[in-house]
Image (cartoon, rainbow, N blue to C red):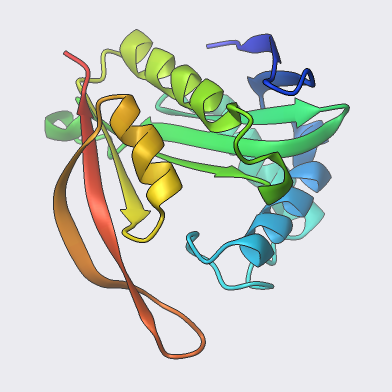
Length: 182
């Protein structure tokens, strides 16, 4: 699925949403390191992401050649400010109706509608692939993300206790959320 969409954000900035390419490797590394420092709602501690440029290029190459997952980036003025990945849970036949997704946006660009636009692309990809349910996990304290997901029709269907353990020894729970597409 080839995607290239230009969108005008609430503040008038132009956001390009497109498929990732190998040329995006350094920009994606920069994004991931930045968002890990900006929020405690993602899977990694600050500084934990350590792919080299070559490793990131290989990862991107794998995503570009895969049939059952995709990685979108959001770009403003040539800088990657967000990413979103979605993919089939596993290639076992009994799971081919399920996809899981993850999304991250640089804090500087929160509340501009970028997450919503990326979510639309994920849902479109799922529908094109015949996916019946889209799943995600979200930290229970991440009310902004939960609100957005609920606006798309996602429902909470469980809680994973102590899903994340922070470096200070505290824990965070995660909600399981699901969107039925059929």
